[in-house]
Image (cartoon, rainbow over all chains, first blue to last red):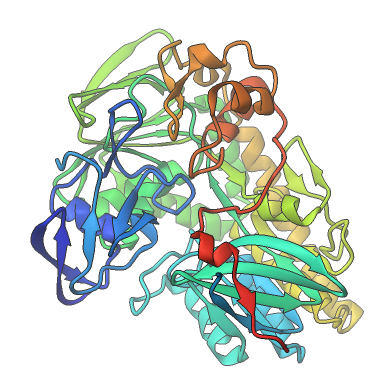
Length: 85
Length: 433
């Protein structure tokens, strides 16, 4: 892992190790629920390999991005639809 | 209104950068073909050799990955293929690469799209902190820190031990490993390993690394509970019941092949077990389209590499280079596949794990469709039309596989796009040639 990068997650600035996935970064900062389901359930990572889309978050404004297949970049804006931890 | 797509025109396009795809690319390129590899992940290696770009690849993958770099092939990562169509004498693959459209036109295709975990619904399976068995390793290999977590590993197959070992090495406490296969099946499988010292050593090392976690054949997870995240797991063997406190449940019931792209292309598939039909030379029912690896039947990395080599040579028109060499590859493949069959038999699913869901248990996670609403559906198509199950972003990859396991439903038809794509990418045009 390289030098740290700063992400903005739901408006809050956090520093995470560089070179890791957004899903890994969210777990590191204690965000277990990445989205809220259509009936209001909290949901987190399931398959961690891009099949299930449970980890879908908005990255820099683009929706339906798989956090498990997205690398953190300095300045990245991550919007989850979850309720944080 | 669409964006302009970058267009690549190799002799051979390979989809999927796991062991099979990488082997195919290397062999085809070394035989003189121009090759493009499209992979959805962040770096080649697939799931078994997953690593971060710029990070250290697993030792077993390094030779092939170095060979891939030397091959001269164009490797495009982060590029899921969302559509494929015949265009004259060529195939046109449409992929999404960093939000932009990428088109690949090739006369020969090698499909090596691998496998994903089978998830079977049970009460509490949608709680955050419930992940797949392979997902635990995937998370660790993509930079997650699971030190200090208390994990239960459950489901079926040798993957459970590998996951437990990885978790233990990462500083998690593995409280329990519940293998749904009976002890007698696991022992029979272990005896087969004796014939392969390398595999036996590997299994032994996993067991050592995962110790002191109790490994319990004949046990399965009945339910998970918690407020907002998993906090406890109920396991049973049908007679005894245990409740185990944990904050991570890694549960997977084996692998299912990713047949979406092969089926979209029109390749003939068999159903039990689901796999692409291929000739001895790895050619599908569509001339010029080859398939290799887990999509030809779950059998592990050894079979995948052998099949990838055969498919790559065949796609480049270079098979057999000589009968002796082709024979060696074919024999390696057949041995590896035989091992895969043994695996499937040893870890076949017991009826109890197909009956865990209650009427209120969510089956389609994308659209929150519970089992009760799916009771009367007799096909996946009917389930989809009545309840929206299968219409979400995963397009039935999770619920469809689960319902096929629970009810024996054959797969529904496949439509593009295979993954969600922005409209301007769907409408992309190519620069006129």
